[in-house]
Image (tube, rainbow, N blue to C red; front, side, top):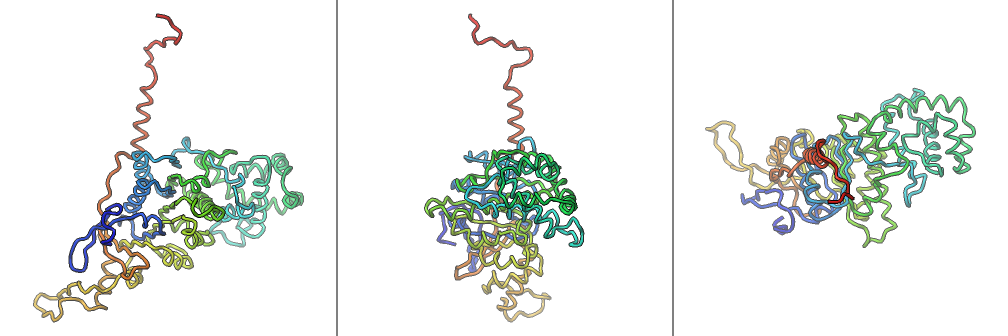
Length: 455
């Protein structure tokens, strides 16, 4: 870590084994590695994510930040505004009137229709999570077949169909016939055999789609036939996309929208295979509450494995490793080169500690009673490792163990510098702009002078 001195951004300090206080720096190499942040609520993860985002702005490296709650989004958006970040797109689902539009049913460049349909199917399955398989409205072979052909028809057709118009496609025969007029023969043949069986399963599909499409924010974002924001372009050009999914406002729809955006960003990243390596612009994905997006068959493990090859780097933050699917954890721990472990539950701390800590021979032995003799003032190796696990479960705010994989040493405990307050939050900026707009026009008692008036 001493070799990093002055090479990037000073963000923390750590105490070496000899007691010396050493500065810790983030460098450009850290932005081009997969990163993991794990720790309880309020332990300092968001502050570190904010620092990482600011360093991206400083180096003009594109990123997409997905925040399920909104506090991080507000601060990072404030920094982006203050830094004059070019090609900045904000998706704030608490403000439907200001949302740009995206139509995921428009054919994605360089992506096979079947793969695009798989993207949407994997997202829509989340609407049926928790349903019993015996229920007629649960996700099964028949429902998936119905949705798969419906989505395929909307993508293949020369008639533009907005995602929010899926309800009309399935329920309004005249609109469906219009869309099916220009689809492939296989897709048309499926709908030619439409009967009572399809009607039965369709009711279950609508029971799940209606609450999602009933949200004002979802309709604003997915309700247009043409897109004004393009996740593919954001990744390919290295632009900046900040997303406030506002789970408190949207409820379960926030997870669905997050997965939908995440899948599109993943496809754009993996689609860089056709782009020459020297033309692949570095791009980062910063995912807060990442476990909500790392569901089985989400494809996020593919991005962790192959992302660096395409110069796409993922930062995942979560409260606990146990929140991730069990089969996903080996990918998570094995493919993230930078790992920050904040305060953890004790059982998890005891499991993780041997992998990120090592005996340094500098932990003093505590006397149980003041008058007991102490033969060895320092803890032995096994005793120190047990103490490290307890320490990991009781770290103060802003303290964490930072492990850089591939180095001869394990993690080092660091203390983050307090996060700087942005010059203004996004909410404050909007308030200032609204106030300025009120004074831009003439007052009611002012006379408008015609431009062609003579003196």
